Amino acid sequence: MKLYGRIGTGVAAVEALFHELEVPHEYVEVPVSNDGSYRLDPAFLGINPMGQVPYIECDDGTTMAESAAMMVAIADRFGRNKMVSHGLYIPSADDPTRNAYMRWMVFFASGVYYHHLFYAYSNRYVSSPTAQGELRTNSLRELDRLFDFASSQLGNQPYFLGEDCSPFDLYAAMLFAWHPDWATFAKKKPLIKEFCKRIFTRPKSQKTWEKHELLGLVQ
Image 1 (cartoon, helix red, strand yellow):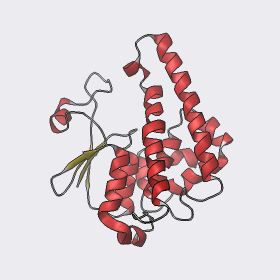
Image 2: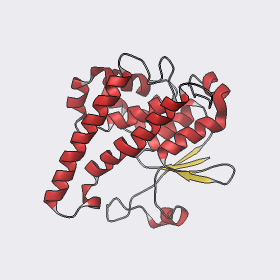
Image 3: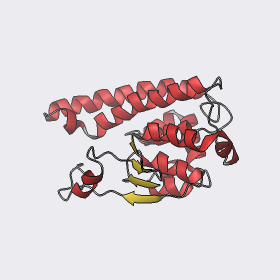
């Protein structure tokens, strides 16, 4: 398994899941272009024309992009028994919590993730500085609305599906920690900060979260 990524991208949760499951893999840091823009190095585009990171080359020759899809696919591929033996929970197709698991994964991937992109890369989507400022303001407002809802659903539970950590929890913690004003957000949402700390200090993946500059946010 070869995992392509870059610090500051959704590869953090995927790499953390690999380490949680003790899956042998090679991590390849993908550089940006020489001009320092968000565009990727041409050599990587030769492998992956869409230029998306994270990106996986599987040991069976197949490839995959989209971090949320990777989280679901990796967990399903290695199966419930391996997940449980490594301290993770994955709802099977007939498990009553499967619907919630899939709903949360898509909710964060389709809503939360893209508002992070709108905020961080506003110049990709609109041209004028005024419009970029408005996009960032509106995206931050929407992130706070989505996170308010998510935190109300998490409540005092240790994890989103209850007592056991699932791949979604790894993904959610990453996206929570990307909040543009983390310090203020963490003060307002102490239960979310504790949730993220619970994820980022898991023994098998702690070094991964540290490498991706997220562990320090909860210490």
